[in-house]
Length: 368
Image (cartoon, rainbow, N blue to C red; front, side, top):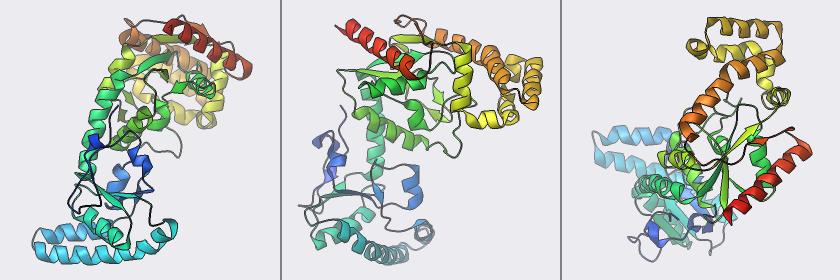
């Protein structure tokens, strides 16, 4: 298991704790993890659970950066003045929420001036404070290394099946029955494919996705099966780590099937925005014209304009998604060991619960 990045201990203002000196849950062991960087840096990526208490805000950060190019001394004067005002404004609320024994972790971009400004003031007040050695930059390198190391160390079962066959629902049911799952689409805030964007839920940045993914994977037990859905190399705009993608390709797969009527009903329930605006849905499929042909796209557009949503959903699955699934499965899992195919007569209720229980029993039998 990867361990977190290095940390400076409070006993010495210059000391720092190295990632390998920390245990698996060390970030979560702190009463407060402070990200001292500017809000735009925090938004791009941060340690899971960290709170953004910026030493300088975005405008002040830009101001100091511009002045630094011509007058470093003046830039430091401006920066420290902003920092002391901002820290002073944030300390009362922080003290109200935390007691003198609450240990805190502070980091900035490289673990330098911004971290020290927060750490020195908190230590003066009496809080035990650690500083992340190398800051976010070191943490980011640790995330990349952790994903490359941890991904192949886990034992996966991959749920495969055409669009609408209930993979996500089955994954959630497996979780409800106590199994370990890795819900990549939830972490990516996207269901995959051209139609996978979630209304009102933009995808995280690539770096934020990587952090959240490693955080989720570190919580998994390598001795137990991890269930997940088959994915291509990208989920929306986000790239899966190469090590994870390759591990999925080599893992046993469970091929799922479901009646077309059930698949159409699932799309209506899980993609209500597509059912509400089928014309916009067909517009999203325009890039598939070279694959499906002009006649097929015109047929979809006619169904959308007529409001025949069920017929449109079925046609899109049969003419586009099902062939794409067959190609992708052969390319990604053609040589992988495969579990027996599973047909789901129902994508809800007792049928889904029974299917999950059967998969769990089969997995445990295979693992003996």
